[in-house]
Image (cartoon, rainbow, N blue to C red; front, side, top):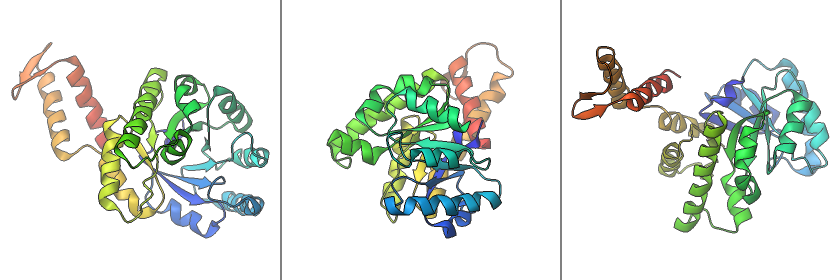
Length: 273
């Protein structure tokens, strides 16, 4: 399975800016998303595919995902052909609202699909989409979802509704046995505190990654999804004590049982990533 399924940071780069591709790979992001959809004007898509194909032929190994145009778009077949390139590790499919389009892309490319949920229909169908064999991870498209719902995603009520979608994707992913979801972009590049809060919110809802639109966002994203030193130390103490105790036990005033021990193991696994 592609490393993109466990990536904490996925950095967008427009497909019509080939001079940025190598820089994106060297940015420190866990993976990059070369965007053939919204980032490229309709008249520039064909030339972008040609330049991208040439770059892929010589690209160094990296976690490369293509965001293609959706199944109803005139450029979808050409995008599918390019997504089959051996240097492409995964395909991000936008506007997913059913399993049919995911199955078609997976079969045509042989690549895992990152299903971008950005409509009300997509949220409603999240359980079925997450369980589709071709889908390796759900991604929440917060900006487009807010547009589809007719809300302002920056208001308290708008955030609450988007949080409902976050919870839905987390539960759907867990039930399907796939990696936890990826949250949408924080569009204000210079807003470091806003990015920190957005990452904390995503982490709190069980997400394990976030989309990025600029390399300077990557460090903050990685920090948010990495356990703190205190959490790591606590987890290690739990496991050390569990090694000499059977059943439930008390540690530093807290009752430790099987679920807590499992959580400690998960914390140490995340710290090693």
